[in-house]
Image 1 (spheres, helix red, strand yellow):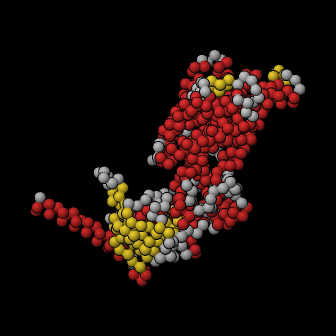
Image 2: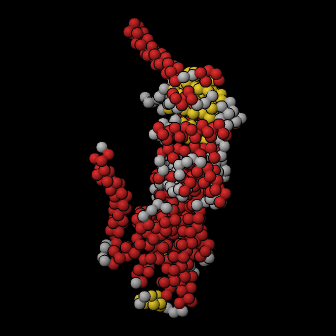
Length: 311
Length: 270
């Protein structure tokens, strides 16, 4: 049970990554691999500040802001210098690897002592539940695990609602239209380049925020932690879309969060069953491949069946 | 209102695929006039409209609109002055956004995009009212994604979006060519109504000789990147489809003459 609670907590934290990927990949149709660098950037920035005794709120916000800068850079390289989107992301991601090492000073920064969000949540848990363990549907669960899960969930819900509200404003609607039909949005007098820069900035801000929280939850930031994160985010978004079965904005955002949690639960169960952790990324990549290709294949077979009727 | 002077545009310059689309187009359009543009395929009609709207920057010449020299302006900066309806019914609307969201975006053409809500009760009421005037039953579907509508419906809505904020210039680029005859009629009727109601300065490219003679107060015939004929006033009113076809035939014969003359000269001298 505590295994599942831990998995769900990581799921909630990484759902911010999923929301970031949703924004870049689904809204802008931009496979933004900057995410792999910016999640580490967020984690590293927050970790090094926490080690130096900075307030957890400020440290987390700094991680988030660093991610926004990274995303804006990718956007600027792509829109102002005309570099292919995927390549702009790769450039920034590669540059971030060195930058992250500089920020962290070494490849791994442990957060063994001091205050952070996890200790906040744990303290809150002890005072609310009044003991070390809580009974959840017959299972004895550590109060601090449960409160961390709840705090992570509430935090993510808050961010998701803010994102939803933003995407429905004038600016947010223009942003969604940019990915949908850039000719139309230019004809409406919107500088679509600026929209992409801002969108990637927000996307990577979310990803870095996810990294900052993840570092505080798992107790360390590691320069390698970003590898494969884009595909994990994609997997969450795709699972989410399958869960809600519609492309409507509110549902898709909820779906991305649910998809991320479900994905981590599946991973936890798979590892428990004895799947080799080294194969995890291979399996995830294969899953995303199938999820990307399958809808097109199904559509093709359906059309082939329909053909004789149409002639 | 619109002043196009000596505009040149060559695509893929210096390659075997070089296309000299505009070769010195000069054109002046007065405020409130409705100009029809016709011409053979590849004569530069659509290129001219795209040059005016800023899809690309021209190689030479100047474009002035409403007193501004817009020659070097990017597309989005020109957009507040220019309403456009494209040939492809899918080009003018954002398919995953709802009808209301598309219209709301268009209602703020040329404004800064802020964090305000895009739906006000007043705007929604106005949308319902305007959309119901289309008689397409769309007023109850304002919250449906626009991608679920037919080409004719989308084109009617694109026209509404292009004219929601009154443009200085309305550009219609064969906007009924991809529609079935019934929808095409409907969209043409809507265009005509809106242009005369709001006294819009308009430039309309068409392939339909019927539309060319029935609509507008001026007709321009383009050929090989230049303006070949320009009919105005009484002359335009007298034009019949047969006259236009005769002009096209003339052009075709002149082209053939060029080729056969070149062939003859080659045989004699080379």
